Amino acid sequence: MSILVYIEQAEGSVKKTSLEAVSFARALSDKTNCGEVVAVALGTVSDAELSNVGTAGASKVFHVADSKLDDGVIQAHAEAVAQAYQKVGAKTLILAKSSLGDAVAARLAIKLDAALVSNVVELPETANGYVVKRSIYTGKAFAQTSVTKENKILAIKKNAVDLKTDGAKASVEKVSLQIADTNFATKITSTDKTTGEILLPEADIVVSGGRGMKGPENWGMIEDLAKELGAATGCSKPVSDIGWRPHHEHVGQTGVKVAPTLYIAVGISGAIQHLAGVNSSKFIVVINKDPEAPFFKAADYGIVGDAFEVLPKLTEAVKAIK
Ligand code: FAD
Image (cartoon, rainbow, N blue to C red; front, side):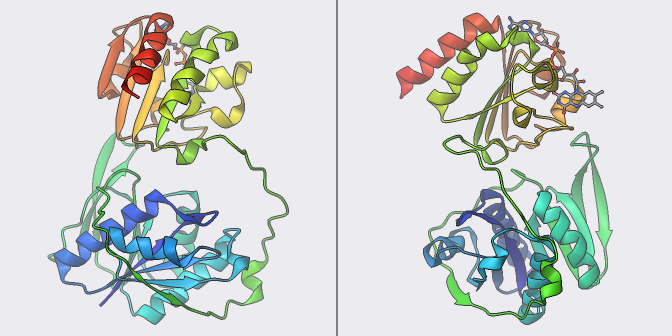
């Protein structure tokens, strides 16, 4: 019995979070002797890109190459994945927890009469159904959820699993599905795209500044470090509220939720609402002049110091390494 993985792609590139979902599926399949891991990809993406999904553990990729699926219309994606699931004869669907993933998974739970568990952080116990560990209360606690339904959907938290990379290639099979026009009732009329910048939600490294930066005139220091690291820039909510930075950089519960390998927080106190947007980061570095700043409790590495002294030195150090 195969496991199906729903792959998200952006402009022809498979998202890292989807490769993590494939790695999770591979490990689950190995644990349960479940058979093949099959991925399903929708819209315009090259065969070469899709065959690389094999490196994370999929043996086959079903590719529904209909360009109408490029826009990520949720109903159409849910319908396509449901049909692929039936075609594969899977009983478990794995996908990445994301805005699109959440919306698609909720519809699939209804279509497939499946149990849906989101924010999964590790492989389930599989002795009797699944007992799944998931992150709750924006990462403050974990819950164990027992799943006994035959059809199961697990949405995997970003950065929760190690990416498998063994260099294997997946076979790519073009699949044509009948997706009724009613599934395309939502029309994307326009899209605003930032060009030339590293997009915050996708960034592997983020350098973020808070009110401790004192004013927009000091953001050059954040940008210099970000440039050297190839990072995106972010900020706390008050910083964008005051207008020091654009709103699309606002990170947190009410802003963008990031999941980089490295999050560097400069002059940000670490309020719970900010932490809610960064707790999927793999490593957090905090720079703050107050040793009691709450952010240090969530940090992997902390620098107690004045941002205006630390940032230029850090940027020089990164330059020297390069
Ligand atoms: P401050 O709390 O003022 O902290 C500034 C920090 O900079 C301090 O820790 C200080 O020690 C340090 N500092 C000062 N000078 C220096 C220096 N020279 N060098 C180094 N460090 C220095 N906030 C978010 O960020 N994202 C959200 O999504 C969000 N959503 C919210 C939703 C609700 C409903 C509410 C009520 C609040 C929300 N907030 C959010 C606001 C949040 O509660 C905090 O007020 C906010 O995160 C604080 O921003 P800050 O850390 O930049 O500023």
